[in-house]
Image (tube, rainbow, N blue to C red; front, side):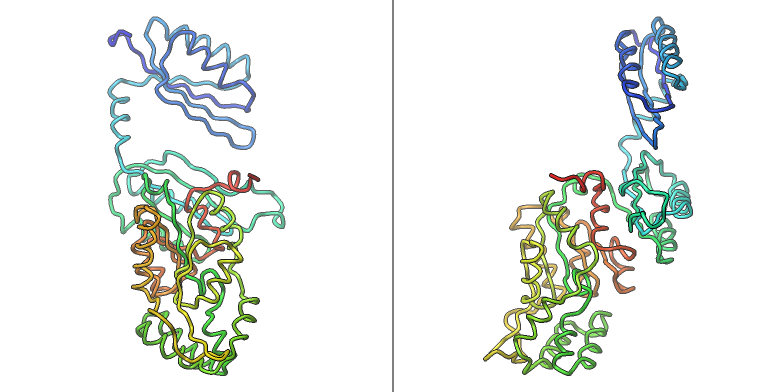
Length: 409
């Protein structure tokens, strides 16, 4: 193709989606040996928008546009032609090396106000939106038929002018309690996560098991007060752990079985675990709680690994002591690193999820750390957070769509 004779043309087609539309139009381009430089298509309801950027020669461009116009008229669709200057095209190609980011809006409902707030922040940073996708299912008009969650994902490109300003804009919106916003760099590791590690108490289950045990032992108020101080990071976890376990001395072992059978499971755990196993994730419980309850969840939901604290039992009763090393924040991070080595994956391919101060080391170490319904200190420090819906919200942070994950395999 003679460089001096080259023309670059963008065509934009819109109209009712009909079978064979893309095929009919690209066949015309093929007939004249036009070279397609880029192509993209989107469907909303029954409407289609198709864009094609192609290059051809000046002696063919007129025939191509004439044939495309006739075909568009025949199919009752709209078509628009835009010539693109070579320098403009080259500048556009050079921008493909810019950083790419994924911004995910997640909540019970995502409103026009939420979208306007986020897109304004994107514009202020000089970023360009490449694509917008709805990850949750289509929305019915009847309120009582709507799904209990909504998620929209933005793919953006460019160089951030001020990351902290953008994050503050998002934080302002998430502080309303109606929406969660995830901001992730889009790269090879985001698309190749392999391991996900969970805290147990107040994450996989909606309680602190040690508080449940304490109630049965008649020391509930004392243990709850120590637990809250530890989770807020006000006292050392190991010290608080020893104090709380000591208060359980004399409790009958059978109480643990009864508590396990009645654990309040967090919303979305079953769905999340079903999908994670289906797509090949390894899953682990890394808990400052107790192995007895971690193993119960492992058996029920199919977790691959459980690392927690072992209570000492003699003659069917708790002794007030524990066995082995305490699983605190430092140990959780260490276990996360060891699991990555065992699974032969990079730490950037790991995800960690938790709610308390003792989860921060593993949340900050993992490639993706998610604070789940977390304490304010943890939410402010973690990379990402979910506070509006259940644990299956994690699936959307991984880019999984309902239309993919709900299909029977």
